[in-house]
Image 1 (tube, rainbow, N blue to C red):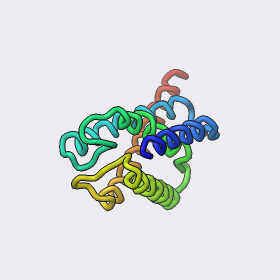
Image 2: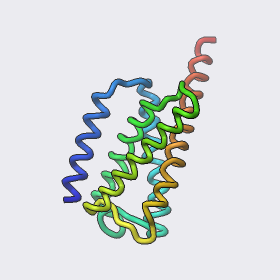
Image 3: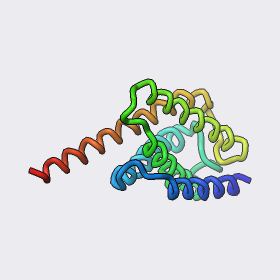
Image 4: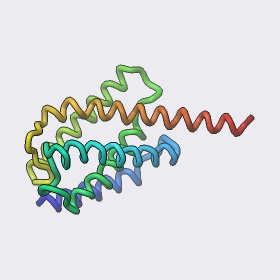
Length: 158
């Protein structure tokens, strides 16, 4: 069941990411994907492999877990960043982050039920705290990418 849900998730996210209207330039979307891989690898290495708080599928390193880290997280982050309301106020951005956090918690709960994810000393309540922080960090990283992109473009025009 876990592998089936994993494959369905990947197919749906790939289609969604491919078909969605792109609001950001390809460089920003690429940076969002790369950031998701690096950030999640760091977090998973620390919380999963070093501390053993949670894991994917089975203990230790497993092949299906790589699909979560290297396919699902980048696709989700591309979609999150693509529609992030950078030009709106803080209240709209906060609501956006809360909505995505709730979506992530829902998928995490489903992942627990089907066996994609397991907890040792972790709790979904920890994730409820972590998701908004991680999404805020991702949005901040994207702001930095956009700043560097604008700075690079303005430097070329002079």
